Length: 287
Image (cartoon, rainbow, N blue to C red; front, side, top):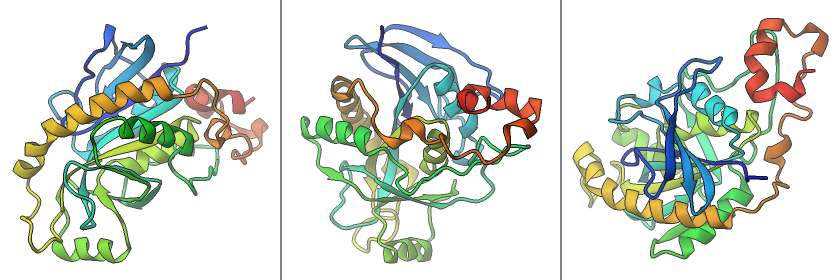
């Protein structure tokens, strides 16, 4: 029996997967609308992989325009059980330098107005995101990172802002006072929705800049970010290829059973429309 595909969400600068063999496009329509783009499905080293560019190929979608629910639901429909997010981030600490890799284990959500749940419309569920990234999947990414020449920070807090603007200097200093490690614009919704879909989720945060807090560094600009995206993308590809070799066959982590006791709604009172809408992500828990 073939192993389930590993999902990869490519962020700024990563719009495809090098070395993807037998590649084909899968354009899905989900109950939550259209994903950011077609999924590229194939194999790397014999392991099935499903790749999606979260901003769309050509970087067409702002963070607040991404249909996070459709993206995660599409991965679930493809059979993905583990999802690695590659994200460009700013550093909020002196010791975390541009081109370093951070594997966050905590997330602070500072977005507003984004949909962060599959549920509602007659179905109530409360999943735990006390630990929003999967420790087992993060360990595999960490081990893969250590086999390369990247400077790794295993663990840390990712603060997710609304964007699309970068932070003001005052905001940046506030986030620094909270002790956060990196700043980005996409991972909060992905982590929450992946947990509801019982998909393991880990972030490979690729540092491009020092945001705007650092007195001795230039303020973050698109030009500065783009200048480092190519190097970051090459590093990410190498780490991802090695990660695929290290992911264990079994999933003993709590991500795999996150919905077991999370749905509070009496099954007899679930509207049929909601049942059909939720079937791709939570079907086994609705009957």
